[in-house]
Length: 518
Image (tube, rainbow, N blue to C red; front, side, top):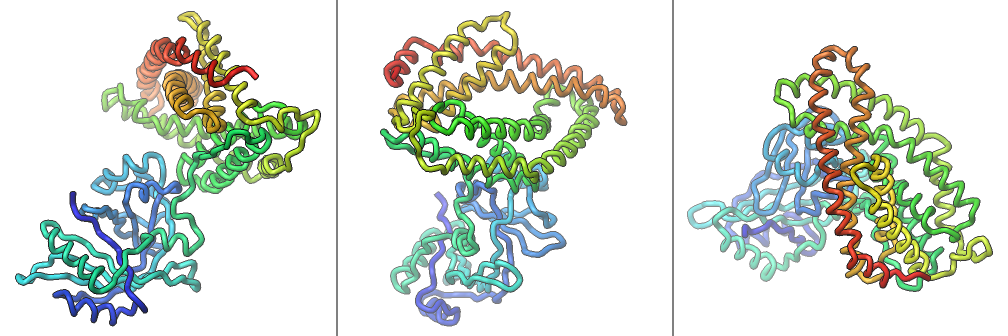
């Protein structure tokens, strides 16, 4: 394995001259010219690069272009020339090593500015007797930039970069720096320290609820814990949705709303009936508000899959359709923005927070509030599972599509119950159950997604015909629709096997034993 770079903190005062004097005593150095580095460090909202050990940066400034550089331990720096922009999606990056490396990491997420860092940088080269560079060092005195007037000094550090083929010299340099000169390894990366200095979260914002509930937790307290977390996720994704930074902001906003609706639907007699009904209605409205843009996002995200069955010349003829869908999305996004900025959505978020943080109250209207969460959630898990098994057994080749769609919705309810309230139950039961449910949901989701796609594409045919190049696009659309319908049929054909794994006698026995009737 290639040696990785390492950041060490300068001892004592961190003075550059003093650090250089120490280094000259023990290492043979060639000193480069000191320079000012002013750059923006970037990552996705959920810090996917950080999780992969990658660091992306570009020069600071408001205009012009520059190199987007991608740093990875053990690899040469990858660079791509980009224009300065508020975000970078993978498909917006030029072809090359940066785009290739980030495609599987970012997926639909955008690279966003995380923090601006200005540094006085002193490059050094450790050389051997043949005057060849065997290790690269960089002394850096950084500061995080809040705005044009406010800056936060960060810990001075020296970065130790290996050179290919000189691993022994790299290890020797590290021993000198750490053991003899007292340079301690930095506890935090420059990225983490800088983001913290400006009040950010180095780990980013996760869309996963990540709630753990102790057995015996009151149902109202458990519901409050989950609803507070889901509210945090929703609120954190509103601005990114408004700014249209990437499609995952809207997706995560919708999922948090859908999960909250599920909590209110499944945990009956836990909350005030009037407040519960009002919030359910408002969240249902919010879900409907966000639906059209998400449907169009799915169409555009899956564009390559749509045109994949077509020969290249026919795929090119469908470009007017993509233009039409993009234009329609812009109209729907404007409507969504008005809704998210409006009083009704603001009040819905406020009502959500009020209900989630209300003091526990046990009344005749809330008979389940003081019960242990495993009693309330366990009964619902058992009942929803049994209903899925019952309804799934009734589905055959003659069943209408609505039957599979309804089963999919029930599956989501069960999955949310398991994911949000499953922690008091044995992990060895919950985890495999969620896994088989995901497998079933995958084919049901594919079936429904293809239905939504074909319905939307059929809906726009008349509008498409009036577009420049529309008649040719209509001809190409026919085979694309046929491919979607074929994939929908394939998903339906896979349903029986997936359902059998989920509803088998062994799984039913596990559910019966783990989630008994109260």
